[in-house]
Length: 307
Image 1: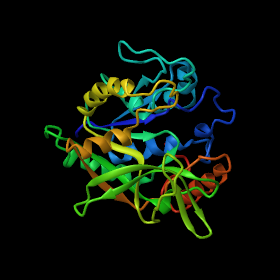
Image 2 (image 1 turned 120 degrees about the horizontal axis):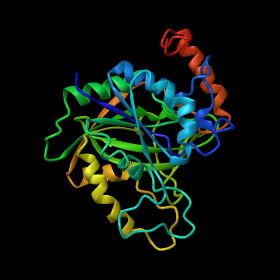
Image 3 (image 1 turned 90 degrees about the vertical axis):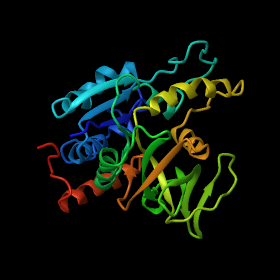
């Protein structure tokens, strides 16, 4: 069996465990959190290593909440995303509070991950199909020796990724007839209104989106050599951050989009009809609990997840 790793971006879960932190809210009948279901689906699909990206100050609590439990099921390793983890010659601008985005997060696993790996968010439920399809692609199709990066992603249907309780941000994808990513555009404030779907670009201007468009949910299947690209690109990104901009982020969708446009990566979009859900808003928790309850009733999961 080929080795494959699941990399979970969990550094943004906050410093107060249990007391209202959305990603750690129990949603299953035995106190399971959303991450439990992602890990279950990944292990079932064939992934055999779990890497948690966390903040160093959260390590003790994180291990108590989930890490120690998962170590009994699979190999577990930790990487640490910190605001001041910068290349030589760079320092944190005064007033900057948050780390540098998903690109910096994934870069922290360099040296830990040497196999094809899948990146996901800690607080999103993705469904079984996407894990299976990505694992199959990475073990049966991905060519790690190609002169361009051979990448895959889960393509969710936009209408399956909306929240009833507020707007969402999604990477809206343009896909070729051959099923490869042509372009991914970070699109903001997507919400359903009485007269249809509404969305905005990064400057707040209205943009058109369709309910059946594929979107990225930060679920990327990547070859290990991609980490070299992240390492090389991070200083270039930092050089380009305008003085006084304290919120600029080194983001995976933008990095991959640029590589595609330069002809340095191909991205196979693996469609999934599964419905995403997550606790984007506090009001979402009840809907997530109900969705998990229905999946158990339908036989998708056992009531005790890791029985």
